[in-house]
Image (tube, rainbow, N blue to C red; front, side, top):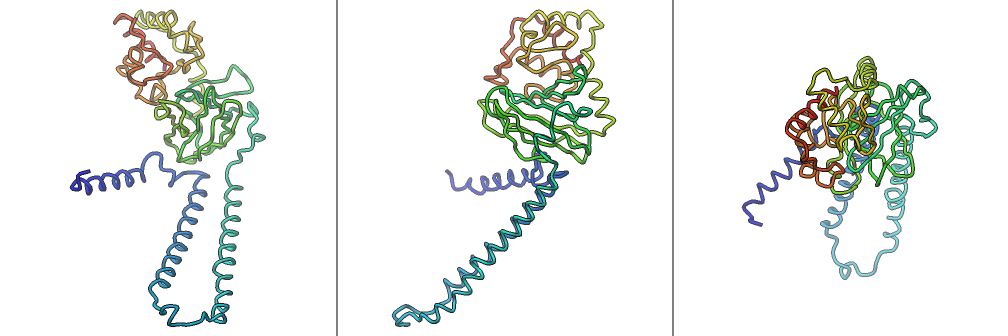
Amino acid sequence: MDRRRMPALGACVLGSLLAACRGPQDYLRPIGAEERVAVLGSAALIGSGLVALLVIAVLAWVTFRRRGSFSEHGAIDEAAERQGVPLVKLWGLLLPALALFVAFIATLFVMRALPGSDAADCQPGTDDGSDIQVYGHQWWFEVKYTFAEPSQNVTTATEIHVPVGRAMNVALQSRDVIHSFWIPKLHGKVDMLPERVNHLRLEATEPGIYEGECAEYCGVQHAHMRLRVIAEPPAAYALWLESQRRPAPEPQEARLSLGKRTFEQSACGLCHTVRGSDAHGQVGPDLTHVASRGRIAGGAFPNDTATLAAWIVHAQELKPGAQMPDLPQFTGEQLTALTLYLRNNI
Ligand code: CUA
């Protein structure tokens, strides 16, 4: 590489690292119960950093302190050597053991204070709906809310809504390969496995949108497997649940009706469900209320009319390898109607 470019490259790397410090996925500044983990982590980092500095200082002191060569000293003074043994016992054994013991006890306290992640705490359908199942797919997240009364169940994708201040039981599983569920500001990574359910408790103590993603390489579009947690006041959350339970709005004009018919009669309905229509596909995301989501295509793109139309026709160019095929067969009128119909599914 051209040496003159080195400073620019260095500034670029440093800039990216610093920018990453305050991003939306800043795991060093979590909120809620995870804050305790961050405090413990910082304390451990500072403590071990100080010890490392001390060791380096002692090493430097020993290295540069001239005590002459072996030939100058003659025979090794065994009595003087033995004097050093208690020093080694204290600094090399006792103090590290003590430090590790303190760190161990502090870790136990932090673990106890975290919301429980026992499977026993997470029996589905036991209360008013704090049970969420998240399934990893190549390459999107399916989200189901399960209630004691099955008619109250809600299925969505790419976004998890939670009420602020309430720990939610989340059950994680995969429909295909191994994925990993990670909302850096709220929780550590948890694997999503095909044949085993993992559990966690998700709690946001402040309203906001928390970005997350798949954290285990799962194929070519792993980097485009994103999700977000939307934490809102309990009343807003209840309203959202209520709106998601309703079937998709019935088209009120001819173009929307054409869109619905096109959706039902083309390939769309084979893979996607829209409740309130004849489309019951189970391969792709449930699109009953797709217009209420901020992003499409597993979180890869913004959810607007132009992007949605482009996604319908050119999915393989936008997200190569995704299960969604290119659908170039629609006439302009059909595509416009289809897009408007989906944009109307609020
Ligand atoms: Cu799913 Cu990476």
